[in-house]
Amino acid sequence: MLRNASAILPLVRVAALVKQIPEFEHMKLGADGRLERAGLPLEMSAYDRRAVAKGVELAASSHGHCTVITLGPPSAEDVLREAIAFGADEGVHISDLAFAGSDTLATARALAAAIDLMGPFDLVLVGRNSVDADTGQVGPEIAELLDLPFATGVKQIEVRDGVARVGLELDDEWVDASVKLPAVLSTAERLIDPCKIKDPTVWASVDSARIRRLTAADLGAGPWGQAGSPTRVGETRAEIVDRVGMRPVGTVTEQVARAVEFLKDRGAFLPGATGEFDEQVATSQGDQTLVAVIAEPDRPRLVRELLGGAARLAHQLEGLVAVIGPDVDDVASLASWGADVVFAVPGAEIEEDMAHAVAGWASVHEPAVVVTGSTAWGREVASRVAAAIGAGLTGDAVGLTVEGGRLVAWKPAFGGTMVAAITASSRVQMATVRPGVLPLLHPRGGSVAARHVDRVAPRGRVVVHGRRREDDIDALANAEIVIGVGMGVDPAEYSKLAELQRMLGAELAATRKVTDKGWMPHARQVGITGHAISPRLYLALGTSGKYNHTVGVRSAGTIVAVNPDPDAPVFAFADVGIVGDWREVVAELVRQLGPLVG
Ligand SMILES: Cc1cc2nc3c(=O)[nH]c(=O)nc-3n(C[C@H](O)[C@H](O)[C@H](O)COP(=O)(O)OP(=O)(O)OC[C@H]3O[C@@H](n4cnc5c(N)ncnc54)[C@H](O)[C@@H]3O)c2cc1C
Image 1 (cartoon, protein in one colour):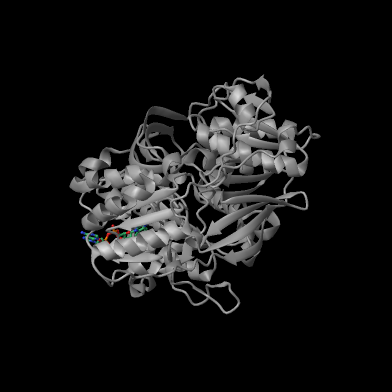
Image 2 (image 1 turned 90 degrees about the vertical axis):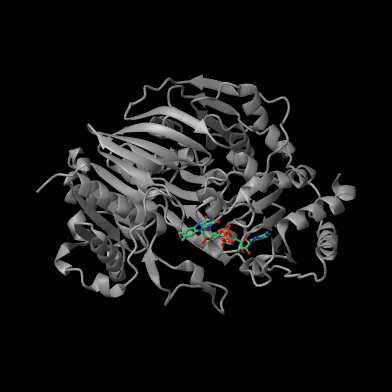
C-alpha cells in the first residue's frame, strides 16, 4: 500500500478515553426537587468526541492504532460503537457492579489498570473534562498513577521522535510546549472536528467482536467503586433561579427607562462588599492543624482569594494557614492575605514537579486541608497530589464550609443546575476552587509568616517553550457587571460599547460563536465549555440565549437581554427583556445612566 505524505510519522498507538453522559440540557426537576436523570438520552461527552477524532486521525496517518476505552454501565457500549463506526480500531468496555459509586480517583485507577493491560500506548487522549461533572481530574490522575507526563487543553499537536509538540489553550493563555511520550493529553474544544455519528443503526452494525469487555477481576484486586473512592457526595440541591421575566413595552427609549428603573430598585449598580478578616483569625495561634494553599505562579489575586478562604477555614478548625509554591517570595503580602507559614519550592513551576513537591510536603506535614485554584495548573497539581497520596479531591468548588471539623466543598454539576456537598474520607481533604468565588479580604495588618525553602529539580518531561497570556481570568471572574456579546454584535462596532463599559466598570464576555471567530479571546467565553460567572448584572447583547451559553450565567444577580427578535430564547432567561437593536439600546442606556452612575 502507498504511504501518504503524513505517514512519515512514526507509528502512534493511541488510547482514547470516553465517557457516556446524559444529554443534560433535557434534564428537569422532579416533584421531590431533585434532578430527573432516568430516561434521558445518553451521549458521548463533547470533549471526548475530539479525543476520539484526534486518536483516529493520528493512528490512521501513522499506521498505528486507536483503542477507545470507557468505564460505565452496559449502555456505555454505545459510545464505543459510535467511536468504532467513526474509525477507531477497537473498544474496551470496563463494566462491573463493583465499579458503582466510583469517584474520579477510583475511575482513574480502573482506567489506568485497563490502559496497562491493553497497552503499550504512546498517547492517552482524554477530553479536557466531562461536561456533566466538569472536574478535569481523571486525565491527570491517570497520568500520576501511570507515572506519565500530562498536558491539558491541547489545540495543536504534532508527534515526532518520541515527543508531542503541543499548543495548549488554557484558562487565559496560550502555551507552546513539548511533552515526552508516552504521555496523557487532554483535548481542547476546537482541536479537530468531533467524532459524531448520531444514527443508532450505525452503532448497532458494529461487530461485537471488536469490543473487549473487562470486569473488576480482570483489572486486579482494587479497591474499586465506592470502597476505593475517598470522596462522598452528601446533600445535593437544585440551583433554582427565578427570573423576573419583565418585558417592558414601547419605544426603545421607553423600554430602557423601565429597565433602568428596575435595575436601580434592585441595587444592580451598587458596588459589592469586600470581606474582612475576623479579628481572631488575624491573630490565630492554633495547634498543628494546617490548612494549605498551593500557590500558582503569577496569579496573585487568586492566591489572595484562596488565602482569605483558608484563613476562615483555619479559624474554624483552630489551625494555621500554610502556603506552598514556587514563587512565594513576597512573604509580607502573603502574611497580610492570611498565610501563617510559607513554604517555597523554587524550580517547581511545571505541574508535575509542583505536585511531587506538595505530595512530599504533605506526607511530612499532614495538612488537614489543601486547596488551590481550579485553573488548568491547579487542576493538574491537585489531581496528581490526590492520586499520589490517596486524598479525596473536589473539583471546581464554589464554596467551602466546615461541618463537624471536616471540610465540605460545594460543587456545581450539570452546568450549575445543581450543587452537591462533597466531603473527603481521607486524612488530607482537598479541593480546587473556582477563581472569583471566595471574597477578597482586606489585608490584615501586623502579620509575619515564617519562610522555609526547599529547591526542586524539574523532571524535564514537559518543557514550556513559550507562554502568551491573552487575557486575565481574574478580570471576568471578579467583574461585578459583565456585558455579554453574541453574534448580533459586529466586531467592527465593539468600540460603541466602550462608553457603557466605562460607566459601569463592566468587563466583556462572549458566546462560543464569537470566540470561535476569534473576535474575543477564548478566556472570555461564558458557557458550558467556557467559564461560569456570577456577576451582579449581566447584560446580554445580540445573543440568542442557547442553553450552552446561558448556563454559564445562571448565578448572575440580574440578567438583562437585548435582541430585536421578540421570540429569542434569551428572553426566557432574563429578568428584563428589551426588544431592539443593541446599538440603539446601548446609546440609550448611556444617555439614561449618565446622571445615575456618571
Ligand atoms: C458541546 C457544545 C458546547 C458549547 N459550549 C458553549 C459555550 O460554552 N458558550 C457558548 O456561548 N456557546 C456554546 N455552545 C454554542 C451554543 O449552543 C450557541 O451556538 C451559541 O451560544 C450561540 O451564540 P450567539 O448567541 O452569539 O449566536 P446566535 O445563536 O447566532 O445568535 C445571535 C443573536 O443575535 C441577535 N441579533 C442580531 N442582530 C442583532 C442586533 N442588531 N441587536 C441585538 N441582537 C441582534 C439575533 O436575533 C440572534 O438571536 C456550545 C455548543 C455545543 C454543541
